[in-house]
Amino acid sequence: MIKQFFVILILSIVGYFLVDAFFKVPFGEKRDNVGNYYIEKSPVDLKVSNSVTAIVVNYRGFDTLGEVTVLFLAATGLGSIMYRRKQKGEKEVRAKNPSSRIIQIGSQILFPMIILLGGYVFIHGHLSPGGGFQGGAIIATASLLMLISYRKFKVSHNAITWIESIAGVVFASLGFIGLVLGRTFLENFLPTGELNDLLSGGIIGIIYIAVGFKVASELTGVIDTVLLNNRPEAQKEN
Amino acid sequence: MNEFLTISFYGTAIVLMLIGLYAALAKKNLLKIVIGLSIIDSGLHLLFVAVGFISNGTAPIFSPEVLESAQQMVDPVPQALVLTAIVIGFATTAVALALVIRLYKHHNTAAIDEIKNLKW
Amino acid sequence: MIWLVIPVIVLVMMTIGAAIYAVVSKNLLYAVVSTGVVSLGLSLMFFILQAPDVALTEAAIGVALTTIIFIITIRNTTIKECCDEKKSKIESKKGELK
Image (tube, rainbow over all chains, first blue to last red; front, top):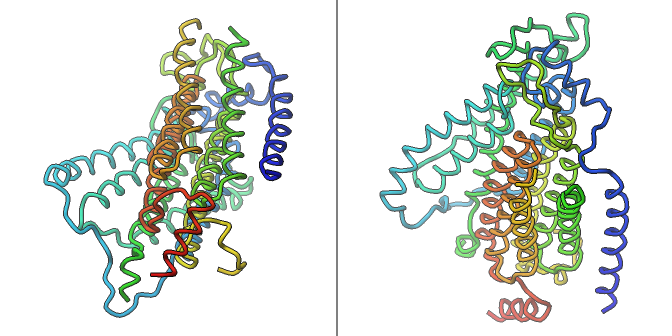
């Protein structure tokens, strides 16, 4: 009973202070802050239509580098927690019965279309809503569909490791080139084209393509690691 | 009209955070605790994006015909922050679930009252 | 902006109802699917708040990937039902006797 009383006390204190703080901020009022500067400068200096992309990659690009590092650490930590050495005579546990013909043929047709949609989303990140993280998540969903409905679909961990490492190295080296040329880290050194062109925005498009590949391969690796772990029934047989 | 929108968006975000906090504090099953942490994340992201909204504003993307929109645009900085936060929240939830799997395989129970050792 | 009243009311009720059911329910599979419904309602609210990038990200990551990782955890560990204090002691004693 005492525990319930303390839980209700903590919830009411947190709730009171949250309501008191946030209901004093008027909803939907015009404010004068740094967002107006980014909206004015982004189609004029950088020639990029999507302001959120310009903020994530160019004006606050160092935070994106930190986020990519955190994702890499999480995928590595997950792989190391679920690591088991294979014992003798142990096979991978897969589904016992194959799925029906409709699911197999349907997922075979859908798989390249979903990958095409994901590629479109992260290539046109600076022209329309989208970007590297969204496109990577869509491609990971496509490989998840194939892993669930097909028994023979395998994802080779070697290919995933190589794609992820090369994409990360491309991102970091584009930042270092800015240092070598005598300007700041992650500075935009390529010429910016015209507005609403595919080749506009300097290095913004190239960075988002690298981020898209990296996120797609990482999330595919995470799902593959968690999905093909052995079940407890198979463990008890050993 | 304005008070109704204020109460609905801010109120939903704060209620979601309180529901998630209750699940993380008072539940005994490991999986329910992780579900509570995920719901706290969702409420926080909604609160951030709701602070940056401007009335009669539009999405911060320039269309091909006009260079300057006649309307005012919504603040783009909280949206950029929330974009990062969603991906990192998913990575944290995945690592927490891997720890739940290892704990269950070692102790064979999913209630935190039964797990008394500190080492797994 | 007067046409926003009915969609906002429906979305708020759906989101909060699904969150309460996810915390209270005893069947773990239903709780995980309710978490997916919370993410779906949240993605639609982001769209009403004029934020298309955030809505895309929440729909791709919150609805699809988070639900799948929860379901794979339930499958790998055979946690069947949520346990109260008495039920968890009874189940672990049954496991020891067998």
